[in-house]
Amino acid sequence: MTLWPSFLRKTRRVVILGLPKSGTTALFYGVRAALPAQPAELFEPMSAAALQPYLTARCFLTKILPTAWPESFPVTLLDHFTHRIFLVRDPRDVLVSRVLYHIWNTDAPQDEATVRAWLDLLEQKRQTPRAVSLCDLIRVNAGWRGQALHEELQRLAPATELLYRLQQTAPVHHVLRYETMVDGDLAALEKYLGLTLKKPFHVGPEVSRVERTRGAGSWKHWFTPEDESVLRPILATYLQAYGYDDDWSLAPEPKISAAHSTEYVLRIVNQKRALAKLAPLRL
Image (cartoon, rainbow, N blue to C red; front, side, top):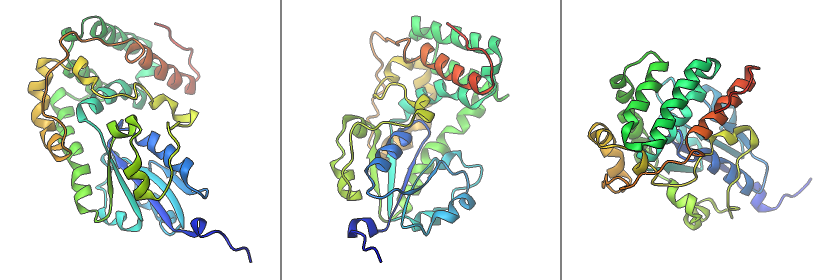
């Protein structure tokens, strides 16, 4: 009988929870690379049933976007995990990233006219940031689903508050800020996990499309005064819960790079078009 070292025998079931576009993919790959044994893993399960076969594994890693589940997330699922990491990010930066990534989750890339119109609007935003509000961009996102702006915004408050409510029910957990992760200050997380993390984290090529700025605070260049009036009351609970500054001051001279806007969108559009065996588009 083979006697494995004690660190390989240790039960370690790790769950990473966060909002979409909050860095959960990077953290998933970072933790996976640090685990001493190849874990059973599940990337973004969408139901409790999908998780059930894994909940007795000795070494298991998953990342969950609970706000994306079509059903209510059952809090009791967290009882099966030895380590629960709640990854939080300034929701204003989350919104910018979600607006730009949203096209991946639609059929819009298959329609060149739709893509061109979206890229034109983003280029207008890039050239004159205050001329196009983030709410204007959210309106377009909502329109792809046949919704109005107010319907899209109604989804934001419950989504940003759900993660906080889940964290309040988990007796043993670690809250990690995206901004702390990007800065590489992971000593507290390493102590919680009992692992040495290899920095920087590198995601797999199959999900490399999720990477954009790896930074924080870009919302100051994307938001407009209209956005503050609409979004501030929606995001207030989340900002307060996780200690984010309620200062909504905007960049005096906003700048948006093509690499983090139009070029990024075109890259993920062409990845989606490639899956549909369609010719790539160019700016």
